[in-house]
Length: 504
Image 1 (cartoon, rainbow, N blue to C red):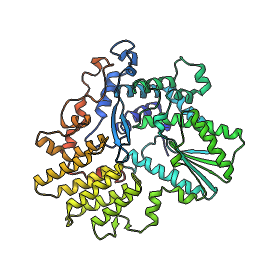
Image 2: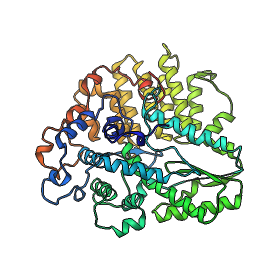
Image 3: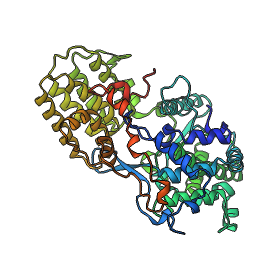
Image 4: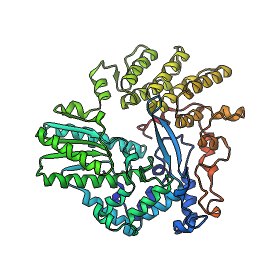
């Protein structure tokens, strides 16, 4: 796997300044942040942060809502994940700081120091494979190959496997620990107050988060990379501790904060788990007890429970062909999995497959309202797949000829989903369905700021009160919406728009 670490400093700058890497959340294709990034890069140029401040020493860390946050519902109830679209000015300044020749080489060397034959890491931001539709497709493929499939391979050599992950990993990263990770904790503490790359990154993290030192933003390759700096340091500390304990017969697979540890000695594996917990605690991390197991059934546990359930139960599918007698029965089957395994990859796959078949079916003879009702219930139980669900719903609605019935049904769908808390991301995708009607009738029902911009209202996504006015006077907020792409959209969401693995 080729990663960002294989790039030159100039290439790394271009990589992080690409809109696909900047925004880590799936959005309709007419939303494009590249004009924003290009404007900021051109306007800021070689200016330092201090030269960009509206008032001397009034740093962005003193201002709230510097980043734009989109709330993503996690469980159909009250749990949510705040995905951040970074302030483009701070983002560019940070990217420029880490991709200077000296800084980038220092980071490349540090990651080399993190490497050890006992640990295989596959979560450093990758270079997209040529065959993949998106970087996300490459990321998912890497996870499948380097974590799931590799785990099964290792079952040949090892008897036991320990599985765990970190609770709220990004939200737990202590920003000062970034400097520890780059310099070493003791060296960093000896140089408190002195300028360093880690200190610079720490400063920008705080600038984006109202001065907070606990947690880093989530969303985008840059923050994944910064997280890997700290997690790579944890790898190094763990290996050193295990050497001290003279433990040598083990293998660790790590994908971001997911760990799979293999050994032939159960007692040693338990000891490794305790040492890992200690190392993580020193970096402000905690193991997720609900996802922690020690097993001798490596093959079975290498595969996610939802996938194993799907494989081991009634073979209702043959590739993309269904053996169910109707769409309704198939949707009810998907609903049962969505309830048993919320937000699972299996639910997403099944929803994508049925949506494709509904889209390709010239005539639907079943009750469309009933089908939509079931799909809504699937989305409520598995919010992670609502993009695919809305694609299916919009295709079904589009088959209704009576415009009044169509409008009322759209309203009913929106009202049903609006009852869920933290639906910022859902609003953005609902707008993909309704935008033609919204503009036709002069009504924008969405409160999400990005939706207002797409509708044509002038709104600010980021707090720029700290920035010199001349540097943002012509920031092309309106160009976030590519009106040409929007105008070419069909009146429903094609499943290809939301299917990660639909190759073009």
